[in-house]
Every structure is written in C-alpha cells, then in structure tokens.
Length: 290
Length: 162
Figure: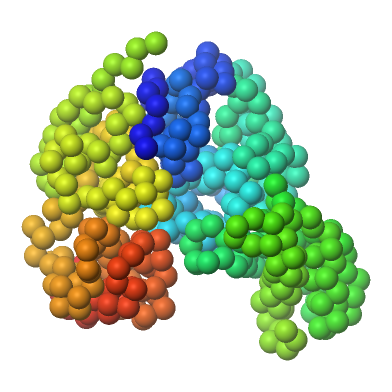
C-alpha cells in the first residue's frame, strides 16, 4: 500500500522543529530514520496530517563522551553508533546490542533516538537503556527535562514523551567499579525482530564474585522489564551453577509474557531463564553449567 | 490542507534528475515510475523482503522505506548502475554461474546487498555470508546457490574487494 497524503516539512534547526511540533501537536509525526514509521505509514496504520522530517537538522546527530558518560543525539544513525570508537569505549553494551537491531540496510538509516522513541516491545535499545539507567533528554518549545529510563517506557509504542515534546538525546552514564556487560537474544534470524532479548551489566568484585547486577529483558511484556529478583540472587548467591539456575528461574517467574504467533508464554519464560544464564556465563567466561 | 507537489533532485547512477512529486511518493516508486528504472523491485513495501534495496550515498537502504523528497540531494545507485562499473560485475557473473536465481524477483536486492557486504567483508566465511543476507528474502532458490554465488564473487573481486 501507499501512504495517505500528508504535508511535509523539513526544518533545519531544533528551534524550528519544536515550533512546528508546538503548532501541529498530535497531528504531526516526527520522521527520524523512518525504518519503523514508514512501514506504518505505508500500511496506513498511522495517517498523520504533517510529517516533520528531522533528517535535515544536523545538530541532532552527534556522539560525545563527557567523563565516561556517552551522550548520543537522537538522530545518530544506528550504524554510525555501532562503528563509533567512543561508543565501544564508553558504552560497550550499546555497541554489543546495536548489530541485533535490524539488517545492515535498516541500521544504515535507522536512528538511535528513533528506535527508543518508537518503543516497540521487541526493540533492543530500550532494554539496554533500562539496564544502564540511561537518561532521556526531552525538549519542547522553551523547556527541557530529563526522564529516567525506568520512567520513559510506558507500554508498547508508548513513551513518557508528551505532546509537543521531542527526544533530543540520551545520556548513558558509565557505571563505577569493574563492570562487564552482555547482550543476548533469541529470534528466527540474527538481525531483526527477536522473541526474547536480555541486556546484562554485572559489577565483578576483586575475588571474581558478582557485586552488582542489572538485568533488563525485552519481548516479555509491553515494555522492557528489570529482573530485580534474579539480580538479587546473583549478588547474594555463591558463584556456581545452582545460583545461575536459581536466577534464571526467578527471572522466568517474575515476568508475565503473552502468547502470540511467534512464541508461547511458556516458551518465553523458559527463554528468559536460559538467556539470564547465558548472559551471566558469557560475562563470567564460565563454560561449566548449562 | 493542500498536498502540493515538491521538487526532488536526485543523482541516480551518475545522472541528475529533477522531478515534481507528492511528498508521500516513495523512493522506490520514484525510481520505477518517474525514471523508468524498473530493475528495483517492490515486494512487501514494509522493509522486510529486501527486493527494493538500493545504495543511498553508498550504503544500502530500502527504497520502499524512504520518501523521495526526504533523500533529495542524495546519490542513488540502483541495479542498473551496478553493471556500468566493471569492478562490480563479478557479483552478477557469480549469480549467473551458480544458478542463484530462479524467478529473479529478489535478485536486484540480493545483488545490491552483496555489493555493500563484500565491501565491508572482502573475505567472508559461509556464516558471515548467511548473516549478511539474512534480511533479503528469496522464495525460489532455498538460498544455497545464492550463498555459493556470494562466496564465488568474493573470490573473484579484483584485489579481493569491491
């Protein structure tokens, strides 16, 4: 199908973008890389009156690092972030997750801010943002606010961004201590929609035990989910297979996944348990256990 | 509200074109209907099948997921532009030798994807080829011959790369 007609504007500054958003409100949609929005336009799932194209607003595409905090402009292309030494150095978990987002052609065009603001329940970066306590910088005409990752993702395709508000950038603070991360997922293909995915960040103590754990799963609910019970078990338990198994089991019990044509809820629970063990094993480099 | 036409200026396979189209006009339709370059095929029109893949400023992109107006000013290479450059010919030859197409509908997208893939991965193993092609769909061949073709093309690229 072809999209319904719309009015097209391509502002070249943030001020113009925010003025247009203020003027058109919910009648307008922001177009970033278009890899999620254009399919919805083609299928006429959405039919906005106005498309505000951010592609000609260069100030929204940037990557910077300040004292170990990575700041990523919303219009940064996913492939640009994936290949950025600053991302690899300051936020390895983001670098590990990015190749899973879609095919090369999608990542060439899709943006970091676009996938986060779209908030598909099967998107990888919301789980990464949640695991890392990312901060979302939202701007509207004349004001700016910070939204914590835990408050940003409300439900499938819905964020805390208000009418007239635009995601400007995300800040990914570097964790203190000896941190290691992993991103794992299972799906029908390597790049593209997964069934369940897991972002893991562990703080490893000098004696090799887990001193802190942050686990966020995707594909198990309408928004990414922190797995607090599993995290606590990893920190409390003695290193070993029993603790890993218990953490996986706690993760499976803590979630409330749906059945759909891709997988049953039971399978999603089992997968979550497996992915918790797989991610922790990857980080600890422990081949034992299964 | 009026949905007046907008001017789009694109350099396609080295030639500059200027046309007036509606903002909702997809790049894929622009190439096919405005320029007559029907080698770019449209399959799913939602970015999944890969048949409409072109190079946009040198990198692969789904032409069904871009509005022509959005990429005005860019350089586009379509399947028609690939054989003009002899250094890229080994890919098409390898698809031919290995019977890597049956109906041919998906082939332009596979070739454009392979152009970029071999630039990024001049000496890929089979697993890398499978990953590189994972988002292009073929309903005829079962992929085995396509994978063989990409491996042969990698061997035959001048200097080992495109």
